[in-house]
Length: 340
Image: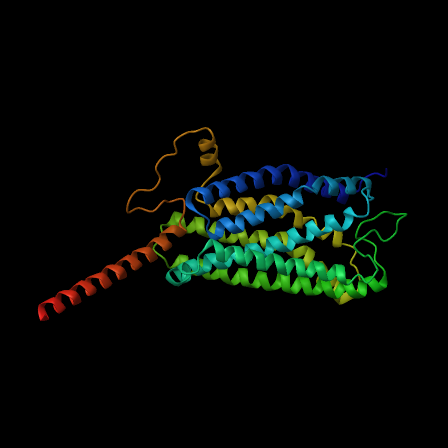
C-alpha cells in the first residue's frame, strides 16, 4: 500500500469524524422526534427531521466503506455494491438539501402567514411533501441508470483498477456531464435561492416582532445555521458539476469537493435540535425517569421555543375572533327573541 497523501489523511479524518459523531447524533435526534410525535402528535418539523435522520443514517452506514476506499485506493467490494453505495450517497446529499428547504419554507410561512398556514400545517401534508421531494431525487438517480445504455458508468470502469465511479469514457461523459449540471441547478441552486429568501424574510419579520432580545438572537442563530449547513455542505460538490459542464469534462477535484457533503451527517442534527424545544439533557432526564420541570404555565410561552410566541399571537387573534363571532351570534339570537 502506498503512503497516504495529505488529502487522503484529511479525507480519512473527515469520514471517521463523520461516522463517530453522525451515528449517535442522528440516533439521538431520531428518538427525540419520534417520542415527541408519540406524545404531542406529528408536526411538519417532526416529519422532516425524521426523514433527515433516516437519510443521514443510511449514509453514515457507508462511511467505513468510504474510509477503507480512501486508505486502499481501490474498490474492494463486489461491483454490485458500487451503484448501491453511490445511490445512498447522492440520495442523502440531494434529499437532505430539499428537506432543509422544506423546513425553511415552513418556518417562513408559519411566521408570515400564521393563521392561513395553520390550515395546511398538518403531518399528512408534510408526509406528502417529503414523498414528492424523495420522488424528485429518485427520478434524477433513475435517469442516471436509464442513461447508461449499456455503458455502466455507475460500475467500475476498468476492472484492473477496480475504481468506483471515477473513470468514464467520452460517451459516458456526454450523458453524465449535462445530467450533473441539471441536478446542480434543480436540486441545489433553486432550493438554495428559495431557502435564502425564506431565511432573510424570517429574520426581517422576527426583527420587527415583539420577541425578547434573547429569543431574537436564538431565531437568528437557528435560521443562519440552517443556511450555513446548506451552503457549506452542498455548494462545493455542485460547483464541480457547473465547472465540469463548462469545461465538458470530469473535473479532477470532484472527489475533494464531495468531502464537505458528508459533513451534513453531523451538522444537520444540530439544526434539528435547535428546531426542537426538547434538548438532549431533557431526553436523558426522561430516560432516567426524572420529572422534567414545568416550563410552561397557563398564559405564558416557553422561552425554549421563540417561534411559539409568534404562533401564540396567532392563536390569541383566532380566539378573539371566535369570541366576537359568538357574542354577535348571541346578540342576534336575543334580538330575535325580543321580536317574537
